[in-house]
Length: 177
Image 1 (spheres, rainbow, N blue to C red):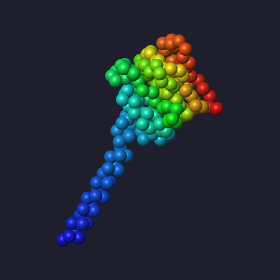
Image 2: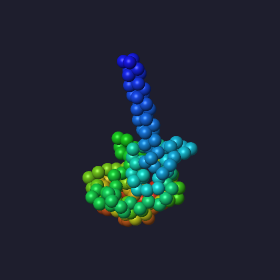
Image 3: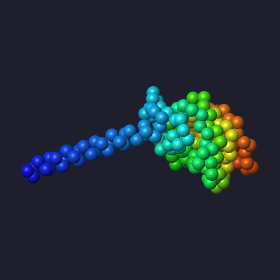
Image 4: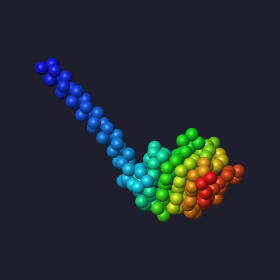
């Protein structure tokens, strides 16, 4: 009887571990509209909250499937949008804007750099429109990105004029170094 209980307990533990593993692998998929983050099947982004999740998958592939308006809480008040990628952990994946536009980007971080929708990249951003909004930071400030570490970033932009004493990139067309 003792041996049977022991076997049942081991089976329950193995079953629970299997369920935890399945939940963990499905978690990233649930955070996006579809895809698995690979080049052939990029994570699909259709909402502001899904765009915000990009920061947790900096080396994955993404495609924007809808225009996104960031003039919604919590991205439109206080310090606003927290940029994707930093000097310590730059965005190293691929982000295809798919001809869509991100509008009303608001960032108010006057002592922070680099600042933009993407703070720092070493990956690729393409086919993305940035429209409207207000971005402020210490330096290396831009609507699309604050600092390009040698990746490729191509976007069109209709953005507010820069604040004084800031290095600002409004339209980015950078070649890989």
